[in-house]
Length: 334
Ligand code: ADP
Image (cartoon, rainbow, N blue to C red; front, side, top):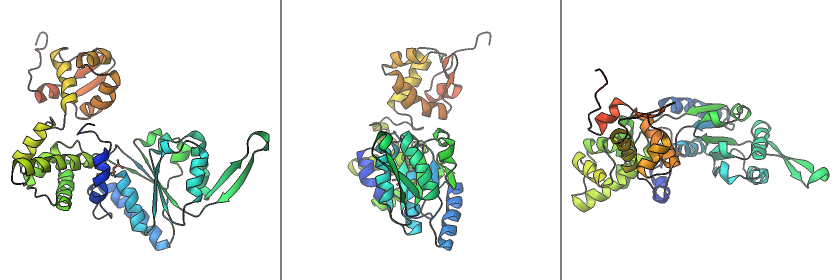
């Protein structure tokens, strides 16, 4: 597991429920989504009805599950949590849908990874609160219609564009989650530090925020590692020096790059003069699988403006040379 990976690891799962904001006011950042969702939920409450279906799109660790729980909490409703990959057959979905209670929130993570038949069942359930349960096989199969209580579906996906339009269109509201600004992550860190009973000074929180890749889950994870360091090596208080030293131990640099990221960038600069170089060649040079370089390291490097994917291959940007403290080669004729 990478310390700067955005997916939840076992420890995250164990502690995240304690760190999750419980209502919209506690939810840091995402002002657009927060304001829009606030209106949706207030209106539903005023009508005394069930909130419209909500689609949340955004990278892992940005707070989609947290918002789904907040939707339920603000509506005073229970929540059921499942995910697209967990629903292999339409029957799996039928079983979940038919056991929902009125007003319940169904959170469907990675909704784009549901099977096709389940997806089609979901269309009808979302629109008419009804499913057809197919009984039997072949020519003798019959569809038995089943009424469902009104419920709110909260779907989460890494990209709304991955959803088939008929599914996307059935959501009353779509919220696009952005990466967090450093100042917002500082607030997340202060809040979590308070809940974990750790003392953090503002510079310490800023140092962790700057290495958290715009992602609250990573910020909370780095905070826990820095807390350990502060307790073992210092008086427990997180300062800028302590945060930088602790994350230095874990090889997470000032911009949130880890060993793998720097290996990829370093090879591109030192072995290939900054590129262009093909993905396969670069991967061999780093001693990693193509997929690891392409899917694990590159997205963040691209987002940070350190690496570009071009038709001729991978190319380092001037910022990459600066970040690794290397001088770019002199331009021909320059
Ligand atoms: P996702 O479902 O998008 O992967 P989660 O909702 O599980 O992300 O969030 C991961 C962790 O990050 C949560 O445990 C929560 O503590 C924290 N978190 C996410 N968004 C926020 C936020 N806006 N304010 C405070 N903490 C947040």
